[in-house]
Image (tube, rainbow, N blue to C red; front, top):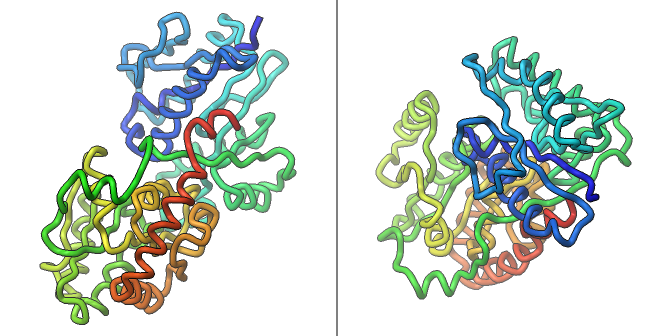
Length: 368
C-alpha cells in the first residue's frame, strides 16, 4: 500500500488563489497528482466543503473540511481538531501544509510545511496588522519550526529562517517554483500578436505593498522622462484604495500623470503580450520569497531590471541588470541604459529566456 500524503490546498479556494501562494498550491497539487503513478505515494487533498475545487480532483481523494460561520481569521484555530480527526480517519501519514498553519507532528502524523517568506520579520513596515493577526503569524511560524521539514522557495528565505529562528540548515530544503505559463518565446508572441500599447513602454507588475517599491519606480522614471519623451510607464495590477490614492498623489507631485498608465487587473491570457513588447520589466522589490513576475517576464524575453536583494539574484542569475532597490539613481541609470542600447536589450532578452527554462512546475513537483 502506498503512503498517503495530504496536501492542504484550501488556498486555491480563497481570494489568495490569484497570489503567489495560491498559484503555488494550484500547480504543485496538480503536478503531484499527475506523477503519482511514478511514485511511492498516494496524494489526498484537504479542501473546504461547499467551495468550488481549483481543478478536477477525484471525489475519493478529497478530505472535506466544514467551514463554520465564523470570521476566516478564527477559522484556523477551530480547524485543528477537525483536521486531525479527518486525517486519522483517512489514514494519512503525512500532511504537507502549503503555508504555515497550526498543525504540528505527533506520533501518528508527520508534517512538512512550505514557508514562502518571512516578510513580517524582515520588513515590519510591510504589514500594519492587528494584535490578533500578529499573534496568528507568530504561532504559525512556531508551528512551522516544529514540523519535520520545511520547504522554501529560495536559498535566501532558507538563510533568513535559519538565522532568525535558529533552526539547523538540514531541516530546510529549497524547491524553486515554476511559471504559470507552459512555454514562452518573445518572437513567437510578437509574431502572433500586435502591440498592446501604442507607444514604447517600461512595465511594472507585481503588487503595491511597501516592499514592492513602486514609488522608487515612479521617482526613477521622473528623472528620465524628458530624455525619452516617446516612452511611457505601464503599471499593471489593482492597488488597494488607500494605496491607489497615495500613488496617484505621488504622481501628481512628480507632475507626469499622463506618462504613467495604470492598467488595472490584467488577465493571464494578456500577460505574455504585455511582457514580450516592453522595453524593460522593472522590479526593484525590497524582499521576495521567490519573485514569480520576474520569472514570467524573462520567459517572454522582457529585459529585466531588478533588485539585488533576497531571492531575486537566484532567479535572475546573469540575465538582468541588478540594482540597489533603494537607489533611485541606479534605477534611472539602468532604465536609460536599456532604452538606449538595443543590443543590450536583445542580449538580456535571450539570456532571460534561457534562464527561465531552469524553472518549471513539474520540476518543482518532482523535487517536492
